[in-house]
Length: 297
Ligand code: UTP
Image (cartoon, rainbow, N blue to C red; front, side, top):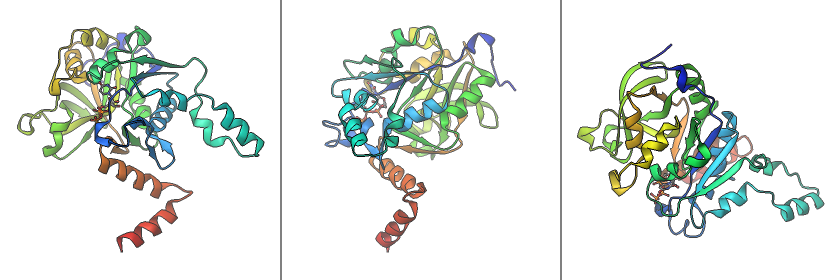
């Protein structure tokens, strides 16, 4: 099946993923004064771990973190913790809980965004590492929960249509002003052609209620567009504005994620994710359910 434009030039394999983690996380202060937002745990895994696990499941091999000051603990999380491991070994404790934190030597690269000038600017900071290949982007504060994961579902779509893809979900129309919104074209199953994109539109000007939700597969030409991208909504360099310029030039589709999305950049979304995942866990779900029932009377 092909919706809209499809071109064999835009089908190179996606091996690299960019994780922009240089934001200030002001909505979570004071928690995020010394600890990066991306290390806040949902049950027992930091947010960044959920995103890296999802990337790995989708076949990503190289992990590019766009960091800033105060964010080095994110990199430490994916390093060997020699003292901890030696002590645990000595005490006969299993190292299994550390398994997800292992990334193949050399496959974690960090680049620096000195000033958080917006998501578009953060992605552009990864240009030298991305090079001339399509790449994925994960915003770790959007926790995508489901199996197969969101990026695995997007990869399946990419294998069909190539080009550029964003994950989308529907929200009540009055909420669209906080997000990037697509102007949808033809739809087939989970795949929708993208005819236009706008960042944080006024409710009355929004082209739909389908919002972009933190996962992207983009062709490398986006980097050239970002290089000359001026400031957009909120005075930030917006990824959405450069993506909009690819429409009509290259295939561009949206994938509706079959799963649940938690906006962990907001406090209520974070609590929702914690409760939903705790309830779903085999090792603790029943206990948490009992506790929640008692609490709610
Ligand atoms: P957000 O706007 O949700 O994150 O950006 P924030 O700015 O850290 O949070 P608040 O609004 O102050 O609470 C989405 C993602 O993009 C990254 C953030 O780290 C987050 O993962 N980001 C954003 C950057 O890396 N650089 C930027 O300049 C802006």
